[in-house]
Length: 392
Image (cartoon, rainbow, N blue to C red; front, side, top):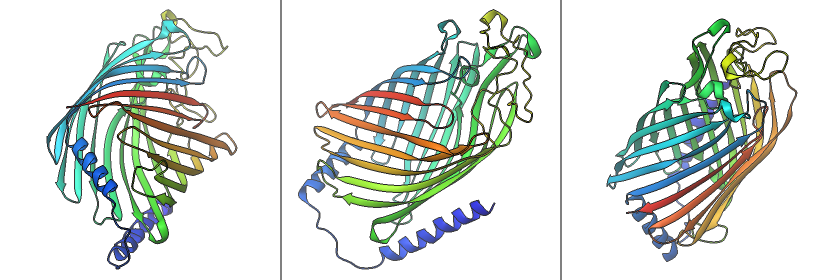
């Protein structure tokens, strides 16, 4: 509780400081014609409707139960109704690929949403969707986001969301047990429900602070509700911000701390495991015969198939850089390193990063490509995203 109170006080204090600073007269760097042209192009692009082709490949480490590679493809249509809002529709199909291909499953998702400005200082986004899995089950996802910027130096947001937990085959599509405690039933297909509040504020001397806190629960079929809380924040320093299309136009460093804690450890697969207690693979026709208890106990995780430590704490240094031209090639890279510790392990190295390169093929066509990698928690993972964006 003390952590939550301290975070809220920190955000409000920084907001008041930033508000006072915004009313203090001072010298401003003149706006260049290049920046004006860039802003006009950005506004034009935001006001144009787009169609996108989407592809993604995700790879991670782990055993037969935990490792879940994914290949996703689909499309997205963004329709701008006016300068202050629009609607969008996304359709994707995902192939879930565990270590043994015969266990693989599919999922097809349709998600639609609307976004609009409430005022010059606030905007919202609401979306809802449905996913149909090859395990003959259906889930519903959705989110609602409200953003509010009372000054040019402060920003706050509140998000309520419901999403699929795609950490393992058990958690995302679920598995149908043939025998054991869940004989004839689906197990898994876990959903994440959470509410988050956060904000940021720019401070004097190019510093900024940011923080976020939230609560929620995860629950699935034959997987009881599991409450969790999360809180984090940090301080950043902007080293460079030219605002133009320079080879390096933005450079920032930050330090952040994040904490997450679950009520129960649901990192187990008992009753629907693909591996027996003697470490032999279990065929689909015998799922449920693993002989492992699905009930959480001291030193023994309950069924759920997702990473859920009692305590997870990380502290990392982060760097961000971007540059290039929106009319040719632009980029944005981030990287972090530090330490992480969670229940049952000692403190160890945390690292990762992402990079996006956007190729502006023509005024209408662009190709953003993103690569991400990290070692969050007990596994390492990499993802490659590519989109072809067509502006109308």
